[in-house]
Structures are given as structure tokens and as C-alpha cells.
Length: 403
Image (cartoon, rainbow, N blue to C red):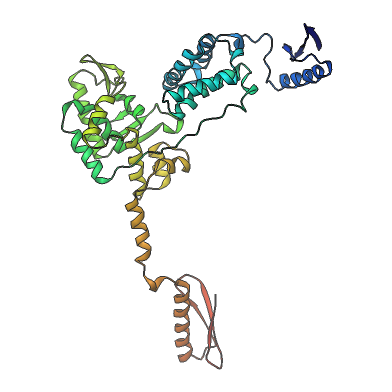
């Protein structure tokens, strides 16, 4: 350990676990410099201090982003890579070649303010800052100002479920125009299998079991998302329609995609369709459901499962959930279903409101009759709740029940 002076400012030079650290102590007072050196050593031992040889922190933001993403490729799914690249675009434009060591809380606050001013949603901004946080953590700099940068408030929207009338209207409108065919068929699969849009797009023919009428979801958002789903009548009809269409264009091989890419009228079954956004927007607008997201179809399917007699375990297995919390997040049991459940309570009537009272009274009446015609001092009876009671008669012919 060594403290030395450059001009009027003290610096420190020390090593921890073979790594050399050289940092400014930002003070001209000797005693304060000694105290700050001890703090730096403690931070280095906790892994919160950048060593002198740490090159990553000295890179410009764009170069650091490329290296950070490249190093994480083995641990990321293809969709996650695309998403992270999208989140990095505005960050690259703002920070450019600024070294990570020069990014400050003020820079980050200015970035957040600019994005918010441009009308970007708080959730999107938080996700972008999350990518920046990952880079700064690797550079051992995030701890310097993590207390100053807090996530923006986000309104959590958990989607919606369709009413029976809305669902019927959507299905009827979807069949009106040939250009909505892919949107209609993908919508049918989502409504009847709980599959996500990404799962539908990534579906290959090898994952359809034509003998058992099932679909195997092998590429999903989570490990729990990999599952086998039975195909009901509507889903099976949609699959067969897709298969006949695939046969016509030579795209029915096992490794071909069920929803193949189509550019300039040319179908390429070796690549998946990227999006049916335009057709979906036109379809939902025609059905009077402008704000319906494609992901809401998954919410609706899980809602219908939750309203059926299926157990929670069955619903989670079909939907690809691993927790009750996620099931509750996606399930929106409609008001009408709740109303039927509550009305069922009132239909029981006043005669069954106080079960214990009526059961006990019935047992006592039975015992009273038994003691009238029997000389036995004790009678064992079993009442409707399955408990055993002991009736004891006295000279006053009072009857009591021990429960």
C-alpha cells in the first residue's frame, strides 16, 4: 500500500488478490487520504472497485456494448439478443463513444429525461437503463451511483379477456378477407392452446404430432414454457388448413415452419414469419377491438381454462407456468363467472345457513324418540357430519349430546 501526491491531491496504489488498484483519493488532507485509502481497499476486497488493468471500463460505450453482448451470447436466446439490441440503439445514439468511466448520474438522468420528453413509456426506459446497469456493473461502476438512479413508476397492465360476444365477432370478421388468413389461423391457435405469438411463429411441422393431435412447444420464453399441448377441434382444424396450404407450396417438410416467411409474394418455408402486425391491426379494428393485443388472446385462453373444471396444475401445465402467482397474473375470471359463484351461495337458502344448529337439533329429536321407546340408559348415534355422539337420558327425560 502506498499513498502518494500528484500536485496537491493524494492518490493510492495497492494490490488485492494479485490485482493492482491505482485511484485518486480526491483530497489534499493527509488524514482524510488515509481514511479514504482504507475505504478503497475494502471496496476492492468486495469486488466493487475497478482494478488498474480493467480495460472494459475504459472502453467507449458503443465498443463496450458490442463486447458485453458478444460475451453474453451463449447465455441468451435468439429473441433476447434481438430485444437487447433494440434497447441498445437509443443508448448508443446518446452515449456514443463516451468511456464508461465518464458516465455519471447526471448523464443518466439527462438520458431518462430526454426519452420521457419524447414520449417513451416508463417501462421501456426502465428496460434500457437495465441494459446500461448491466454494463456498468461489469465495469465496477454502478455501485457509485445506484442509490441515485431509481426505476420510473410503471402501471402494470395484466391484459384482458374477451366477452363471448367479442370473441364471436372477432372470429366472424377474421373469416371475411383472404388477406387476414394468417392472422386468423394464428389467432385460432392462440385462443385454443394458450401459445404466445413467438411460440406460434417458431412452430415447425416436426413439432406437430398428427397421430395424437398434439403440439410440442420446444422454444419458449422460459423453461416451463416447453410443453406438449393437446389440440382441440378448432385448433386441429386450423393445423390441417395450414398443412394443406403448406403442401401446395412445398413447405410441409419436418424442418419447415408452420408460418413461413413471405416477402414480395415469395414464400420461404425455411424461415419463420416475423410478424402479422398489419393484418392483425386491420382485423381487430374491423371487429371494433382497436386496443386488443395479440398477447391478450393468451390471457383469454387461460381465463377460459380457469373458469372450466380444470385444476390449477392442469392449467399451469397447458399454459407453461411454474407458479400460482403467474396463473393469477394471466387469469381474469370474468365478472359473470364471479356473479354465478356468489349467487350459488344465496341459493342455498336459510334452511342450510346454520348447519351445526340443525344437525344437532335433529340428532336430539331422534334421541328423544329413542329414549321414549327404549329403557336403555345410553344410545350411540352418528349424525350427518360424520361425528359420533352419546345420548344420555335422565329422570327428567332431558337429552344431551356429546360431540
